[in-house]
Length: 98
Image (cartoon, rainbow, N blue to C red; front, top):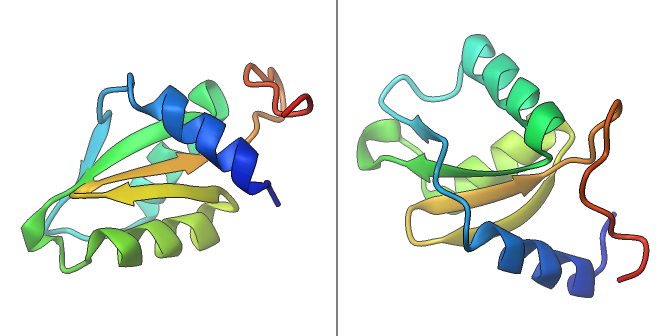
């Protein structure tokens, strides 16, 4: 569990990130979850775009993905969502001093 200060710090880092993937009309399937999990392991902080035809609101997609991937929901702003999960192999983002 992360604190509100850590969440705010991660939101600030996410401002500069492009949305790396989209959630579209196919919704969330096992292949997408695997891809998102791999991206979280590599980058720790990812931004996704939720398309209107996905069947999910951004907040619904954020909570569903966070639960399925064991990640922390960071933000749902407009149609963009941000997730964080510390890398098991090579952690890059240090939240200990925040």
